[in-house]
Amino acid sequence: MKIENLFSVKDKVVLITGGSRGIGEMIASGFVANGAKVYITARSKEVVTETAERLSNKYKGNCIGIPSDISNLKGIEILVEEIQSKEKSLDVLINNAGAAWGGSLEDFPEIGWDKVMDLNIKSLFFLTQSFLSMLEKSGSRDYPSSIINIGSIDGINKNTFKHYSYSASKSAVHHLSKVLAAELVKKNINVNVIAPGPFPSNMLGKAVSFDYSELEKRNPRGRVGTPEDIAGLAIFLASRAGAFTVGEVITCDGGLVAVAGHDLTS
Image 1 (cartoon, one colour):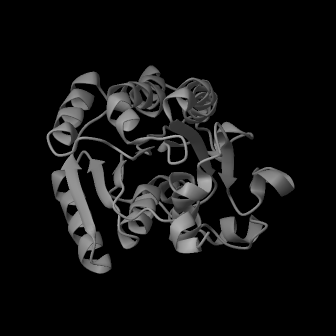
Image 2 (cartoon, rainbow, N blue to C red; image 1 turned 180 degrees about the horizontal axis):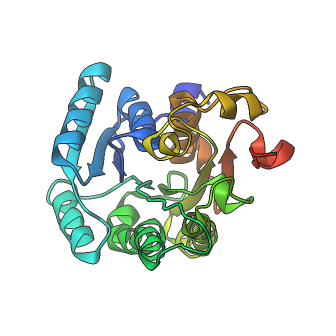
């Protein structure tokens, strides 16, 4: 029962949507550094290629960038065909790609609802559906394949920012994941959720003008999240160590939900 075996992700085939920056890149870094073959997606060919090359060189690993727009079913179909042309099975699917939209309650637009819900929940469902056969091929009773959906503490507590559709979409991710977990565990596919708190990212950065100092002061841990925090949790869920963990929504937030919620305005 050595730790290098319990938490090993070596040679696993991993797909991370939205993996070119932010939390997706942090998670990808952990898997690449520990010997997994990692595919990352993003809409921008230039950005996803640069990130994949940088992670491969930094960790002397194998990261492949695939430009892909999974906000619609056609884009999902193209991505699935691309992965199927390269791999016979898939060990880990990390549904990380997401969008947010801010605005006042009185003026919140329909596009701010549709865009967010389409990417954050609808695409997650149909991407998962499309990869079921590849995930089932790699899973076994003791070594199940893994689907890790990235939710948010905004789907648990009241959102600090006026991101109505985002909060609703992440709550939907949490509950849908539990529904899927109950069904897919019979196929040796584990489904779990990571609900991150504040991590340096383009999405959060725009909301706070890329100044995280106030968030750090109000966090029980006294800081924002790091790549080690989020990658470590994802690796646990994808490894033998997490094989008996099913249908859980696990916060990774420095204690915001547990201690005081995350209303940073109070």
